[in-house]
Image 1 (cartoon, one colour):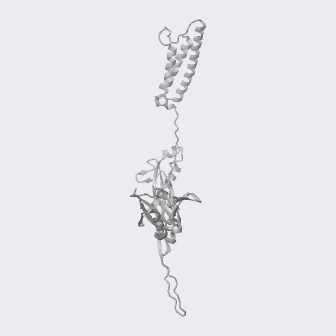
Image 2 (cartoon, one colour):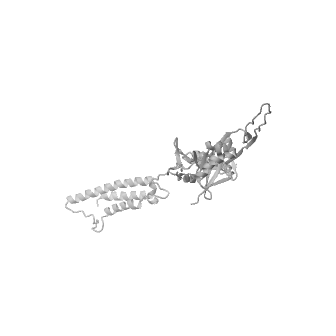
Image 3 (cartoon, rainbow, N blue to C red):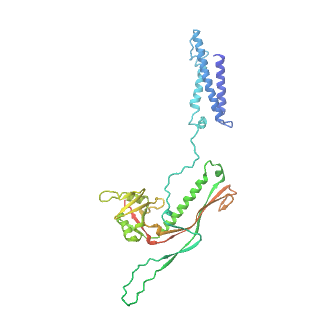
Length: 378
């Protein structure tokens, strides 16, 4: 072994030890370790070139270079052995799968962006009557429903008969406050790379929708349930008879995912489906109920639930049935010094976000809807 080869081997050894020292401990520095390994690769290439040059010199001198002999003629050549050790270190010791053996140097695909799972956001607010008010209390006057009998025949010279006077009733509202508090650490607000406040605002909006849905469902549940055994006949009677001419033309059928699936399996005597997309609005559905075609409103199962195998079908005109008085739609405020219950924003380094809405939801016309239920037997 000539002096240059020996010097290269020593230099590779030294750089390898130095690189290993940067892989863990207080002096851990993956970038420096990788840089040294790159230098080792260059030195290894130079070492291989020197070996080939030495072999060529021996061949030129008429000697056969035996790589399997050591300098003393026994065992593996020391240069070859060290080169193999370096290869072993690179291929086995420094492995991607083990963090301490070099896995820390492999970048991970980590995103801080807050992704949203797809959900079905539904609000009954889109279908009920809504009025913005500026006072905490109030009332509205409605004319009562009465049968009008018409005029009586009047003979010549006779007195006119009296007719029944219209009757009126008053419906009142009283605004109540509804809201909640969400605590967020100031460290998160200041350190996150994403706009976490947008997520907070959307979270409050979801809670507002859920509150309105709960208020509407509570009012719908006050109506006595009508059990139907034949879906089409039961819905047809609800529209034609129970609701009648006053509401039939403006009525919709509100049902959940289970109800839509049930309707989607119904066919007429010719095998044609009774549930079809509305031609002008393909994303909406309509059901053929006898001589009428009625729009189906698909409410998620998470909002309108099937309980005790009873699938709900709310049939009617919810705009006439329910009215919501809105005093303050949704206000969100944040404070880093407020205290709520066990939460102290100042001492706990928090920001407390408060969401508040002010409204009252009332049953306006109990005759405007029918609450049907179909019991699943299978």
